Image 1 (cartoon, helix red, strand yellow):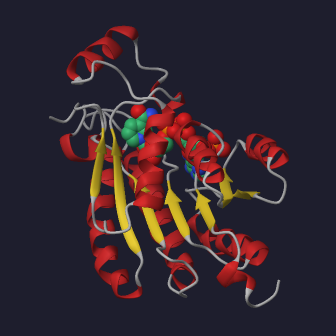
Image 2 (cartoon, rainbow, N blue to C red; image 1 turned 120 degrees about the vertical axis):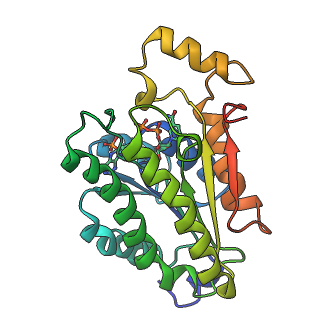
Length: 250
Ligand SMILES: NC(=O)c1ccc[n+]([C@@H]2O[C@H](COP(=O)([O-])OP(=O)(O)OC[C@H]3O[C@@H](n4cnc5c(N)ncnc54)[C@H](OP(=O)(O)O)[C@@H]3O)[C@@H](O)[C@H]2O)c1
């Protein structure tokens, strides 16, 4: 790649968990906006490959397991080695494992917190030299948090701890990176129709929808639009937490 290409070429985003659900929606909308997208997966490599086949040279499948954060450097290098730049990091993938605290094995509990937080720190740390090198008009990091991180949910002490921590992490990082022009924001979805919520029994789904001002679960497209707003349009937002929860937390 020519040295100047990184300053003038198409912008590059890395989206974690791009194989399905919200991450796949975000990847698609960033592609629609003209970015090149590296999409990480753990088990769904063939789904990211399928997207790559539709967008030749504009999608890069990248294996990355949140439970193996030592792979973060290699994941970032795969992207920058291919395209010579990184403008946007969307940390969407998450490990969820539920269980009330009275019963959950503490090792399982800690694995949820550690996998979510350590992978976040490791990916951002590896990406910082690229985000701060001045190639992008408004580089940014978007962390996909959760409404559960602020209001809690029974059975979610581990997941909610990680999601609450993402807010403190993002606000501290926003202060660290603002001098370099890098924005760091959090999206806090409410309940969304994806594989993550597909096992919720009908009666509980109805109760959640009832408790949501807009009376329903969100769609992948709606949440992806909010993430892309933070990544692409919200050029004067940093350290912000955008609720996309249909009013569930009000
Ligand atoms: N759905 C909701 O109601 C909801 C609400 C609030 C917040 N969120 C947040 O939104 C984000 C996306 O959730 P979703 O509902 O779209 O989830 P999903 O449909 O279950 O998809 C999860 C994605 O994360 C990846 N992933 C899971 N475990 C991983 C691991 N150990 N290492 C690497 N990647 C892993 C999966 O990769 P593979 O498929 O390749 O294994 C998949 O791409 C998460 O941060 C979640 O906490 C979701």
